[in-house]
Image (cartoon, rainbow, N blue to C red; front, side, top):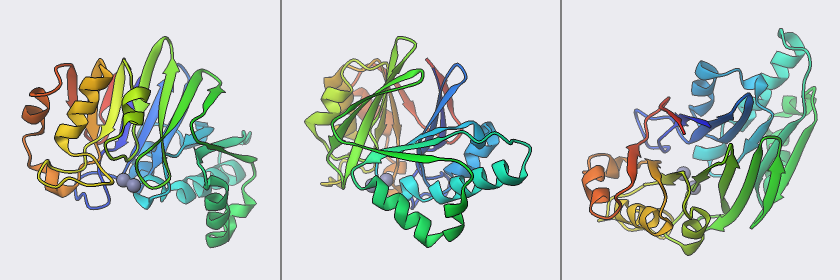
Length: 249
Ligand SMILES: [Zn+2]
Ligand SMILES: [Zn+2]
């Protein structure tokens, strides 16, 4: 599989786009979250019209705000652009997804005219087969958020979305090849909504993942010695995400 980081930051980041990931297995593509800036980065590395499935972890705007832009792009490309055959768009997310998409349609009325079918699917602790991918979701500790475990080509990758420390992300990530984990805050600022550096490292250690990719950094954590702190806890492969980083595994 091939992972491209479209956004490694948060809404407060000056140098990083908000959350977004492109996951590819052969010619099959999944988009995971699409916050501010992530869609612009997506256009740099792929044709957005080729993407037929989006997975949202939750509805905070740093993870979902560019969905409307993505839909408008797809509408214009299929209506006026060189690509004429519009395929169905699958939007997968936590409970409340259908209401969220309906609210978007009402806020941006032109989206109602998209020349393709949009199918929404709400997941909780669920299992789902998509062409080329097996997807497992688990509710984690953040406002209406699900994390995803995606398997293809005999490999597994887990996306935490936003979460506080919880057993569910540890069990979902068990022995994953790659854990894409939020790392919002320094150890000095623990939170009931997000992870500190040491908590993220502890999750990677307990889940016994092969490789850890930290992302979703608030400014307060950017100047921390993240690698040094993690290395005291977790000994597997470690990367600090940056926008447009590519990982093949
Ligand atoms: Zn959030
Ligand atoms: Zn967030």
